[in-house]
Image (cartoon, rainbow, N blue to C red; front, side, top):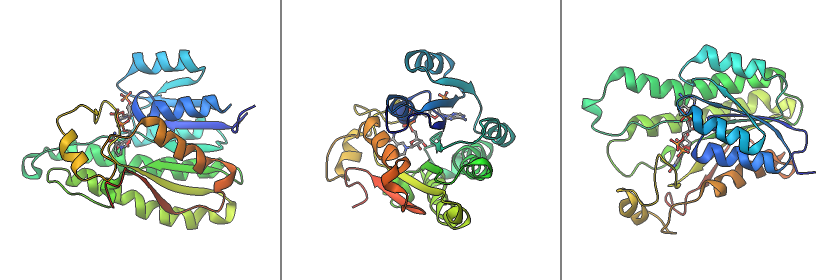
Amino acid sequence: MGAFAGKSVLVLGGSRGIGAAIVRRFVADGAIVTFTYSGSRDAAHALAAETGSTAVETDSADRDAVIARVKDSGALDVLVVNAGIGIFGDALAQDSDAIDRLFRINIHAPYHASVEAARQMPHGGRIIVIGSVNGDRMPVPGMSSYALSKSALQGMARGLARDFGSRGITINVVQPGPIDTDANPADGPMKDLLHGFMAIKRHGRPEEVAGMVAWLAGPEAGFVTGAMHTIDGGFGA
Ligand code: NDP
């Protein structure tokens, strides 16, 4: 019997990286886990087979598909919104449609998924959104749309915490710094630049982020809501 035995957990964006670590953590702790994927079908089905979780295809850029997925999941004990993308480069040269798609995935989907989940969530339900330390600190050029999207989650969590607090539902943002995933490999070209900003000069591990998510979803965190929880090796310090 794990800490989440029998609990119903939905992870939006669970096929790879931080999301996959979150899936593994909740499964290990006894939860019944469903996760979404979009581009990584093979990785998603391999993870589902390995863990006994359920993989379902849902594009987080498609608002109505996200809402339908959350609605069809029934009364969730825990919703984790992890899916997110970055577009890096000269703001003056970036494609407007691509930027709007980033906003749909990184901002619109977390909002609509959180609201939809709260409709059926029981007392004590938990919503956890993966933001970024870049919501607080953006020390390099070329990432303004990403930083904007992660800052937006802060206002969302503060507001929805008040909307849902009377029902015992909490909502929190986990804000990682550099974490070793496909999106930000520990041996990638950004390594030295990123480590230069940090107090602990290494990339974090996806499992470290999953541990913070699990704590926020667990019984010790019932009084924690509307807050940002940074796990960044001191990147934002
Ligand atoms: P990865 O690129 O390694 O993985 C992204 C995950 O999100 C994949 O499972 C991917 O699924 C899913 N995803 C992306 N777009 C969509 C979509 N349109 N619909 C459904 N799922 C989608 O990223 P990370 O694991 O590094 O990042 C996860 C989260 O953590 C993001 O929100 C990111 O912004 C945040 N973060 C990451 C940091 C890092 O340094 N790694 C630092 C700070 C924050 P699929 O491939 O199937 O589409």
